[in-house]
Length: 264
Image (tube, rainbow, N blue to C red; front, side, top):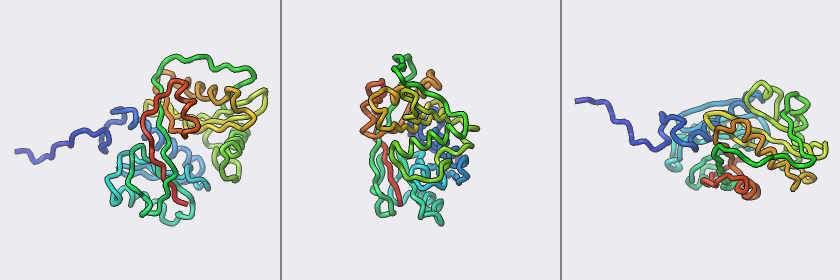
């Protein structure tokens, strides 16, 4: 009689589940790789263990220093959470985040604060309406100077903590698959965005618009520009309730709410 243990029934989140098993698995793998590229470009640290990918971009912003779960947590004593704690030993003073596309236990006993439940949205491949709007132009950042302009827009547009320019969009990103774009309205820099294509999905992973450009169509133009990076693939994003209606109007479907936790 064989003593080889039978493989567990497929859940979609086993350690050896193929990435292409489902679009949510593709997204969390994409997000993990994006965080790693960002951290390495910034001179930071990365690590990975079954169930979680970790990146520390050494920037004073929680979302730049993130653990992205690759499976649901089993409880407060899940060993994945110990891996996350160990990664931040010696760097706990730097804010960091934990992203789960599944509901989680209450992580406050482990020192986390609930930031919110952003919505995961997805758009199937297919044609879309024209993105052209009067006075609106989109350009890919191909120089350190354009990256610096984009970073300034992101800092002012969210807003987020100021820091040495080049911390959020380091020049090394120009040698990666991360695509940073600048949006202009009537020739003035007014928006910035970031996109990343990997593992069969396009990740619309950051967008900021300055107040002078809102309601001018530049945000939508940047969405379509990133969709068109790989029009034959699904486009995905996790988004705030503020931006969600815009995505829905553009054909994105709300799939599930994520859980985003932070430690400061």
